[in-house]
Amino acid sequence: MELKKAIWTRKTTNHAFLPKPLSEQHIREIIEAANRAPSHFNSQPWDFILVQSETKRKELGKIAGESMRELMERGEFFERYRKYFRFSKEEISKTRSGIHVDKIPFFLKPFVPFLFGEFGKSVFNFLGVPKILGQDAEKIVSTSPLLLGFMLNKTEYKVGTKSAIYSLISMGAALQNMWLTATSLGIGLQFVSTPMEIPEQWEKVKKLLNVPNTHELMAVYRLGYVDPSLERNTIDWVSDERRNFEDLVSYEEYSPKRV
Image 1 (cartoon, rainbow, N blue to C red):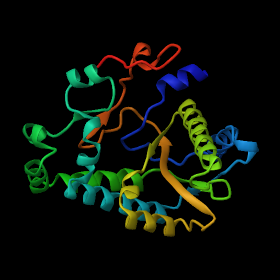
Image 2 (cartoon, helix red, strand yellow):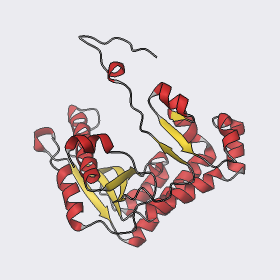
Image 3 (cartoon, rainbow, N blue to C red):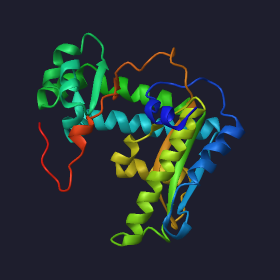
């Protein structure tokens, strides 16, 4: 796949992957591509944990599912990220940003306008939405052929220093290399983010992965071969819209953009 095509077709894979292990060659290609990213003084501040055992994947899946359910029951997730949710084609077309929740059970649709208030939270809890989302999260994480812990070496990552900023920029570049390479190989990625939202759940993840004090666990990703025909989650979203060139750039100095 050409680089430009990989950039334009790269996306987050929300649904399950094909139930087959990633080849060792493909795993090596992805990690080696990440390691070709630029880093401050060629420090290469990253390390990776590859989780393939079914037992450990199920344990991480359980943590992800519990985290999702807990966040939804509290209403914190929707409240924290409310500005990014779009529930119609018109809304996502107008803003050209955020996520379009385009797949939702018919019995929930009448309650969408009330989602971000106490009434909406009560209704969603009563209808068992947090449980549905938690079950989906646990399933897709547990059945992912590979879970990847992305770690940053604290030798370079010193909060409040230029070194920390350079390290984070490098980590972003490494992730992009990894993601584009995976895309070219027919492999999807998704950030397993919900455990990070709850400190005690994230500590469980770090303990399970035996993350040393010398490193910071920055993220966990799930990887697998993509099959577009596989069933989407019960509640699902897409994020294909992007802002236009004219909305992104200013010439010579910054000028506010149109709304």
